[in-house]
Length: 350
Ligand code: NAD
Ligand code: TYD
Image (cartoon, rainbow, N blue to C red; front, side, top):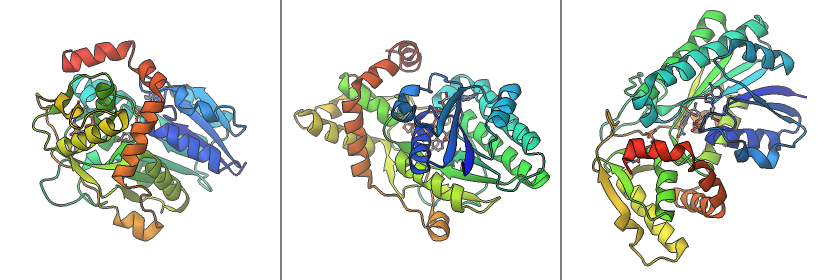
């Protein structure tokens, strides 16, 4: 095997697309998916590749130093793609310490065990940390996040991700560990857990439930199709410069209200509804505490230095995403039963 790659969080939304891409495109790489299977982890996401000879799943927690040490030794890991995290801002407002534990302590544990295992022999080694543009804080109506934009996180989620990014750079500067970081904008696509705006709205339209829009729906996000994020991770892993950061984004800004109106239109067309039916479900609700106004990535460095650009337009990506949810209603039903019902009630009250 050419590389022995540990992917953390590979049963989650983005991780599952990264696992699939590497298992499929690189038969000479051994891929080990290390995931503790929280509410967001679902082995169904990668069922199609689970029998591949270059793939292994290991259930484990990144905060458990002994488990991390064992998986690094057992599979002679030389490359880590670190995606495991608590990832939802609203949950971080309810339970900030869970985010500090997984995102800060978990990342520190992973770094520390990799340092011990690699023991100063960094030839052919890489610690690739997958992070978010939310570490840069909130933009006004103009401007972009660049790789050298100062960190200014405002939610417990983004603060814990910022902490993890700082730890990664600390291991680079202090111990010369080969690291690379990418900070990506909002992802959307198949297998997205229906706590985030797009899959939650798809699920609610299917169930004729209200579409909760925080505040006035004027907040702006820059959306990237998850399969394009996986391709960016592939390019950065192979061609990125050690110690560098790369911003990943779609140059695709939408206010939440415009995005939901487009989603409603596409859903009505696909479901054969009369035009305008789904839009009637839109309901403006109390704003999120500390709600960041706008995120927008400048991904010029990734384009100019590594040649990466997104492959699908938003309309194409959104259409494919809706099709996936319509074809995978069992998946949606499975993840919205059980604890999801209580989560939904506690946040939205119904
Ligand atoms: P997700 O919540 O869908 O999945 C997270 C995965 O990590 C799950 O499979 C979960 O079981 C696993 N996990 C959680 N805690 C763990 C622990 N202690 N040990 C081992 N595994 C654990 O998240 P996602 O949306 O796929 O995000 C993946 C990564 O990408 C995160 O680091 C996130 O910060 C980052 N990111 C996400 C987005 C986005 O729009 N979703 C954008 C930019 C960056
Ligand atoms: P989300 O998908 O949670 O991603 P993030 O907070 O990481 O950007 O939210 C995207 C945007 O949609 C954000 O501005 C908050 C808003 N939003 C709603 O208006 N209603 C909702 O029910 C959710 C989950 C989000």
